[in-house]
Amino acid sequence: MAGAGWSWLVRAMLQLRGSLSPQEPDPDPERGSGSPHADWMGNLPHSLSALPLANLAVPGSHDSFSFWIDEKSPVGPDQPVMVRHLAGIFRSFWKKMMKKWSVTQSLTFREQLEAGIRYFDLRVSTKPGEDDELYFIHGLFGSKVYDGLIEIDNFLKAHTKEVIFLDFNHYYEMQDSNHAYLIQILQKTFGSKLCRANLVEEITLQYLWEHGYQVLVFYHHPMAHDFPFLWPGNQMPAPWANTTDAQKLVQFLETTLNERAKRGTFHVSQAILTPQTRTVIRGLIVGLRDSLVARNLPTIMNWVKSQKPGVNGVNIITSDFVELVDFATTVIKLNNLLLHDRTKRGLI
Image (cartoon, rainbow, N blue to C red; front, side, top):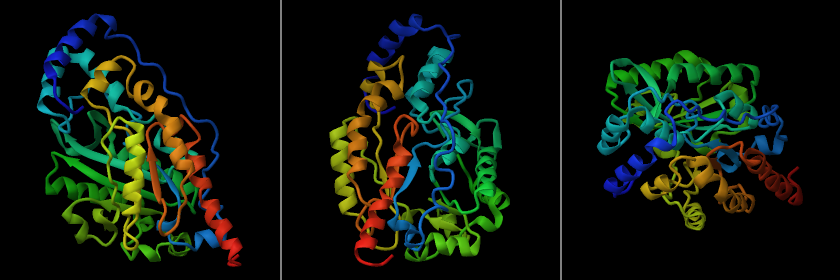
C-alpha cells in the first residue's frame, strides 16, 4: 500500500467498518483443475531443450506464496508505519482488508507447478517472537518457508525433468544468522538438485538433466557469493512498472524488454499492476483480484500473446492470479515460435 492521503483513508475506514462483519468469511479461492502442464519442460523437443533457458518462455507467479496469508498474524515489517498503526486501530477488520490486497495468488505451490508455473517470486521475514523461524511475507505473514520448500521438492521428486527458478528478492528483519538458516534449509531440502551458478548461456534443460539439477536459486544478498549453488540476484533482473494503468504497463514491458541484456542474465517481465492508496480505497471490500487484476487481464494477455522468446525476446513472464486466464498455457506456447523458426532454417 503506497501513496499519501492517510487522513481520508481513515475516514473511509470508519465509514466502511460497519459494512463487513469481522466474522464474514472470505470466499473460497478457485482451484486449478487437472495437471495440464506438469511435465511441459520434459516434453519439449530436443531442439528446444538444447537452447539456453534464458531464451525460452517460462511462466512465473508474482508473490508466489501469497495463496495463504494469516490475517491473525502481526502486520509485516514490509509495511509503512502508518499501515501498522491503522492495524492497531481497526484490528481484525483492517487485517481482513489487508488480506484482500496481500493475496495475489489462489493456487498453492503444487497447483501452480502442475499448471506449468516454473518461476517463484519469494519474500521472506522473521516474525516477532520467532526470530529463529522464517516466513513468507506480503503485508501479513504467510506459511513457514521450510514448509513451502518441502511442497515444491515433493513435486520435483515426481517430475524429474522439470526445473524451477526460486527468486529470493526481498528480506525483512533478517540478520546474517537468519540468512545462514535459510541457506541451510535450501541445502537440506533440495541437496543435489541445486544447480551451481554458471554462465547463463550454458544453462540448457539438457545440461540440467545430465547433471540431475532441478533448482536454480537466485539470492539477492551478498551472501550469495559465498555459496556455489546461489546465483547472484543481478542475474535475475525484474524491472517493476509500479503502475495501475495497463497501457503504461505494456509500454514499460516493451521498453525494458528492448533494454534487456543480451548475455549473462535471465530476464523477468513483470506483467502485473500495483495498487496505490486510492486504488485500495475504491476497491476496499472486493480486493485486488476483482478491482484491479481481472478487468485489466485482456490488455495484459494481448501483450503476452504478441511476444516471442529468444535472444532478444521474452524469457520469464510473471502474473497475479495465474489461474484466471490461460496464462501458463499462453506463455508455454510461445516456445512453438522458436520451433517454427528452427524448422524453417533446417535445424530440426
